[in-house]
Image (cartoon, rainbow over all chains, first blue to last red; front, side, top):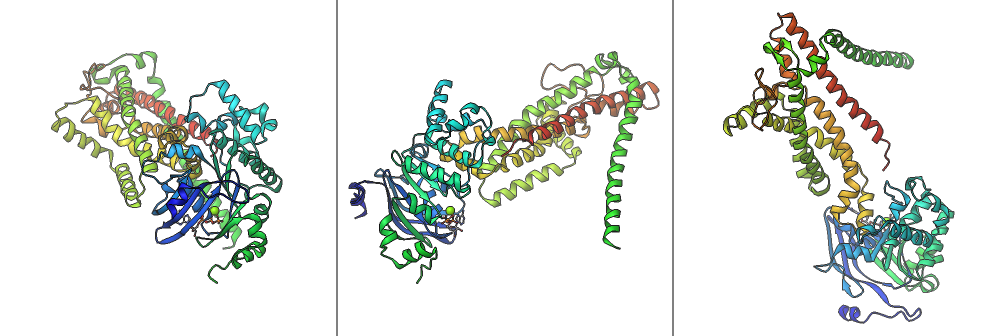
Amino acid sequence: MELKELKEPIADIKNNTETIINVSGFNVTFGETRVLKDIAVSFYERQVNCIIGPSGSGKSTLLRSINRINEGTDQIDINGMISFKNTDIYGKDRDLTLLRKEIGMVFQRPCVFPRSILENVVFGIQHHQKLSKAEKLEIAETQLKAVSLWTEVSSRLHEPAHSLSIGQQQRLCIARALAVKPSVLLMDEPTSSLDPVSSRVIEELMSELKKEYTIVLVTHNIAQAQRISDHLIFMCEGKVIESGDKEKLFCNPDKIQTKTYLKDEYCDCNQ
Amino acid sequence: MNRKLTNAVFKIFVWAAMAASFGILLFLISVLFWKGFGAISFDFLFTPSSNFGAEGGIVYQIVGSILLIVFATLIAFPLSLGFAIYKSEYVKSSYVQNITDTLIYGLNGIPSIIFGIFGLIFFVNLLNTGISWFVGSIILAIMILPTIILSTYQAINSIPDSFRENALALGLTKWQLITTTLLPRGLSGAFTGLLIGLSRAIGETAPIMFIATAFSGVTIPVGFFEPVSALPTHILALAQQATNPQALQNAWGTSLVLLLLVLIFSIAALWRRVKFSKIEY
Ligand SMILES: Nc1ncnc2c1ncn2[C@@H]1O[C@H](COP(=O)(O)OP(=O)(O)OP(=O)(O)O)[C@@H](O)[C@H]1O
Ligand SMILES: [Mg+2]
C-alpha cells in the first residue's frame, strides 16, 4: 500500500497540490532512545508545511533526516522510508551532494562563513558550477533581492558578513541556500533567535518563497504556524499525532491532544 | 586572615612570581648580549670556522641549522596537518581518540636524547645511512610533530559544528568542507605550532649530535646522507675548549646567534597568535 502511494502521489483535495516528500514507517534511534517512532507523513509541493510540537518531540530530527544531515551523528540508527519526488532518499546510490542541492536547509542560528557578503551568497553554488566574477555578482543580486536584503547591502557586498545584524545574517543564509536552486527549503526554527521585527520579515519572505519552493518549517511558535502555514503536522514524543490542513487542525482537529496543544501549548501524549 | 589581606598577599605573590621569571629571562638575555655581542661581526657570520671553531666564523653552522629545520618542517608540517584533520574529522570512536591522545602526549614527553639514540640505532646503524643531516631532520620532525598536531587539532576542533553542518547542507563534499572551511583555520594553528616547534628544534643538541652533525671538517652538504655542523652542537664543541679565551668568545657569539634565531620564531608565533585570534567563528 505504501508503494502505491509512491507511484500515485496523493492529491490534496482542497489546495489541489501534490506531495513532494513522503515519509513512511520511519524510525530514528539515538543509542538506546527511540526518537522517531513509525513516522508517516507527507509534505506538499509549494506550500508551507509546518511541523509543530513540544520541545524534544523529534521535530528537528525528522527535518534533519530529510537532507540526511543527521548521518554524521554518533550512534544514530535510521530505518524506514523517505521519498523525494518518488525516489528513495535513503536509496543505496543516492548522491548526497545532489540531494542537498535539491533540498536546502536553513538553521536556527544564522551561520555565516568568515568571508564577504558576496562570497557567502555564492558559497554553496560555486562548488556545483564554475562561476565568473560577473555571474557571482548576478547571483548575489538576484538572491539578495529575493530575501529583500539587496537595498540594505548592495553597497557593501565586499564587507565581512559578520558585520550584518543577526536578522540580516539569517536572510543572507536563506539567500545562500536559495542560490543553490533547491526545490525544497527545510527551515528549523529560523526565527527563534531573531527579534520580532526580523521574524516578521522572514515570515513574509516564506509566504513569498512558497510560490516557487516547498517549505518545511519547524517552529515552536503556534501563532507563527497559524499565520503562515498551509499544512500542519503536530508531533509529540516522537510520533505524528495529527497532520492536515491548517484550518482543519486549528478549527476542528480529530485528536484531543492537538486541540489542547494548539490552544494551551500543553501536551500529554500518553493520555 | 581577612579577605582583604588574603587578596593583597595573593596579589604580591603573583606579582613577585612574574617579576622573578621576567627577571631571570632578562638576566640571561642580557648576559648573552653582553658577552656575545663583541664576537659577532660580518666575518663571524659569513666565514667558515677553523682550528676547531676557535678561529673563523660560523657560516656552515648557520646553514646547517637552517637546513635541518627546513627539512624538518617539510616532513613534519604535512604529516601533522593530515593527522590533525583525520583526528578531528574522521575519528568518531572515543576509544581511538584516547589512543591518539596518549600517543601524542607520550611522544611529546620523550626526552630528546632518546630521539638521538633512536636515530642512531634505527637509521645510522640499522638502515646504514651513516651520519646524515637528513636523518637529523627526520628525527627533529618526529620531535616537533606533537606540538604541530596539537595546535592544528585544537584550531580545527574549536570550529563550531554549525559551520560543518551549514557547508554540508549546501551540498559541499567532506573534502570541500575541509579545504574551504576547516583548513584556513587549521593552517593558522599549524603555523603557530610549527614556529613553537622550530624554536625548540633549532636549539636541540642531543637528538642530532650522534646522527647528523660533525664538529669539524664539514662544509655545505651536496647530498642527503652527509653530516653538517649546526649551531647547538658547535656551542657544545666550543664550550669543551673553554680554556681558550678565543673559543669561549666564539661560544658566546654562537649562542647569541642561536638565541636571535629562536627569538625570531617566538616573536613570529606570538605575532600570528595575536593577529589570528581576531578571526571570529
Ligand atoms: N545527537 C543526539 N544524540 C542523542 N540524542 C539526541 C540527539 N539529537 C537529539 N536527541 C534527542 O532526540 C529527541 C528529539 O530531539 P529533537 O532535537 O528532534 O527535538 P525537537 O522537537 O527539535 O526539540 P526542540 O523544539 O527543543 O528543538 C530529544 O529527546 C533529544 O534529546
Ligand atoms: Mg529542534
